Length: 439
Image (cartoon, rainbow, N blue to C red; front, side, top):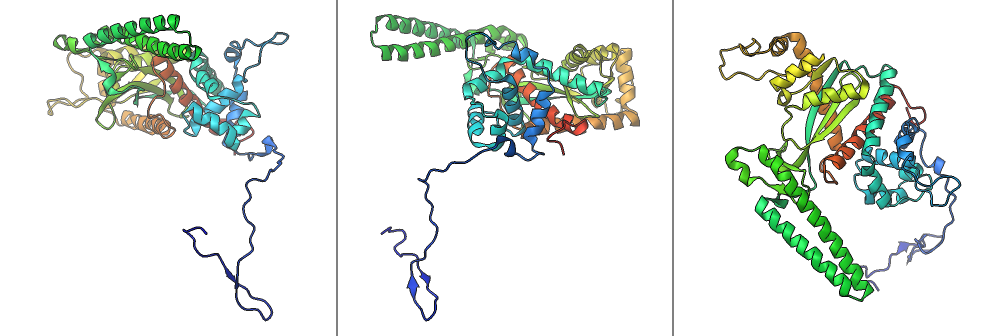
């Protein structure tokens, strides 16, 4: 008898002329039995499910760049890969649901109805998912341009006012991975020595299992050697941004050489990237993305204006940015290109001076900006920035944009593009509809 439950469950017997206690008779679980179930994938999800919205969005995209990398062709040997359309839809839906791990997504494709419906009976593994997520940066960037251009053609996006904001995203590197030049050179020398020693062992060891183990160790050391070499390459760039007396103290990460220590939203300093998002204020559609390792937003507005012009063949009529972007040279440059700048004017140290009165050394563009920001109309327009950029940033945070699961600017850009595309899926559905799946 189970010591935790020493008494048999009993129930009072009530019948004609009967009184007493007896063991109850119930339907017990039998998990050893085999069940055969007919599953209709199409019937798994209701018509208004978000996964159907994602699939409808993907079906409208031009995926030529994705299919160009498929080597298996009709009439020739080779195992066909997973349809890029399926992988694209899975990652878009996973991003909307806050799933950022390829292993977690692979498990969901087996256990969750929405992901099973998107996969459509095709088996996917986490290696395929992880590689697809970062291997098509240019194709993802093109999709962002094409999808926004389609909304512009439909009149849903007009690029009248664009709000830009930067969000610091924690890098996949620890603070303790940053080393100075002398330490990096010592680490590189040690890694090279270990690689040579492991190669020598591989040539002399006759055991196959031992060879495989040492080959794995050698591969790991080669990867570390490459990371340390990249960190050394980044040191001159890091040192150039420091004062002359501090350049000898410049450090770079042996985990992610392109990451930089930045001040985060909570006031702490951590390895991070600066993710830039530009959003059309009227539609709240993300129209531009960029990732940089600069800790400041200064200088980023002009870069984004040029990016939008390159993407869509036109400039935004107005750029709404916070005070971190208000670099006078940038305001000059953007204004001369044809965009009106709305950014707060910093309060002068001399409190008796009006911040909105042009200063003696101001250029005509800067003087016009100061005067403009003193008007009630400009202040009303500027309020659209927080309602747009801050909202988009908050949604990205809620969907998991807290720490990057990849390393390097290029792969970080791929992750940001997934968030931008996923956000635009829902905005497209709300603005113009996507057919099935839209309520």
